[in-house]
Image 1: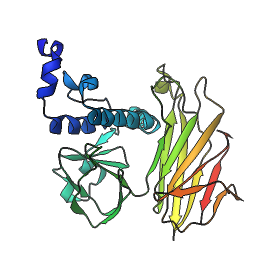
Image 2 (image 1 turned 120 degrees about the vertical axis):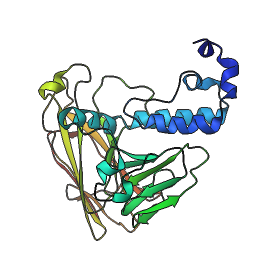
Image 3 (image 1 turned 30 degrees about the vertical axis):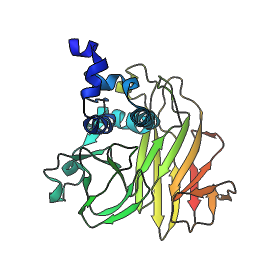
Image 4 (image 1 turned 90 degrees about the vertical axis):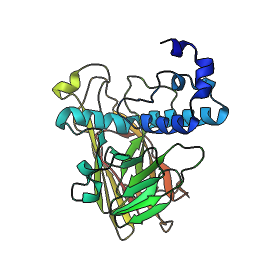
Length: 289
């Protein structure tokens, strides 16, 4: 371990073109792994651009805690892994059979690693960095990711991704403020799960599950946040929801529970709005027309 102790020189000798892609790969794993036997454990040795990239990825990981935690709880129930090989998610697409430089992070993110090429199965995909939408027939695309990112990341059509705001640390606390990032396409759903974050109660079923649905047809989207099913000790009785819904810019009306919402914005292809705290026992219905 002497190399670990003498990092002032060793860090500078490691090629940056390998370290930053390792960061991209490592932050999109169930347990963060960034090949950090020495240098990446100490990002303060980097120049500012690399420090900023490191900080961005860590904050992104923190913001995705509701999504990742939901998948972790799902894995305890049915064995579905958080990281999913392409053929596991797309068993009918034989092109996916031998892919080793990309995978699905849960049902919605396609992660490309150590390359600027990515195969996108049939459907519409959104570049998570640029917002570009790509309609694929089942094709390989070449994309240069931005200089302040370290790999390719695409979002699958129909995605419902729960996230939280800008947080500086993660603790054993429930998800009381949640942003639902929705990419409407046909009918899709995602179950957000939460528990007390400390005990093994989830093994006995003390999990709170919130089913979120999206139904889209002819450019009209209906988003349904169903009442929470199940509970755990200390579960909040209210939750604050924010929404970021992909739209082509043609929407003119947002309805919440049948009542028109005036305070919403459209920017970078996303309709954004916040709701007042609602009881977790109540259904929330959003119509975007």
